[in-house]
Length: 162
Image 1 (cartoon, rainbow, N blue to C red):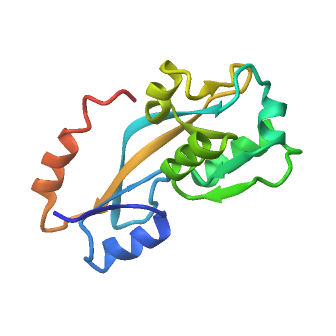
Image 2: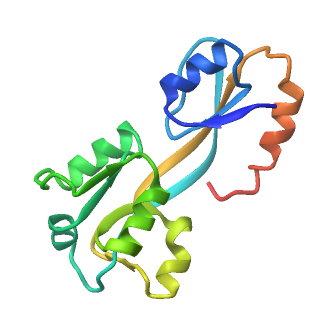
């Protein structure tokens, strides 16, 4: 079984050409020949390397934009319509987390990713900032030859909180 995570458009092409069997994305792949199944809900929270900041302070300084997909961008724009350009843009939360720990700043990151950092006071949650929930989806081609194996793999995700 070959699985990949990433942008839905790229993964759709890989699924249809048979390069991969299963994709993991933050956006559901909508196509007639695809099944997209929600496997998890992931809360994204605004965290900072400096304690006791408000959302405006956190977003005004060394803000790191993580591209969590179009629905995150829309929700973010609704909550914070007038922010300045970020110091750094990245498509990976782990890069943003490392940047915050080494250089300081703030970013929206997945709560499970930063929970330990919050407990150790290496990062601090911006309490007045809204959490933005993301759903993770597993997608695969209808009638593919590895459906049984895909089904068995997806069973591992059934115990995850959604």
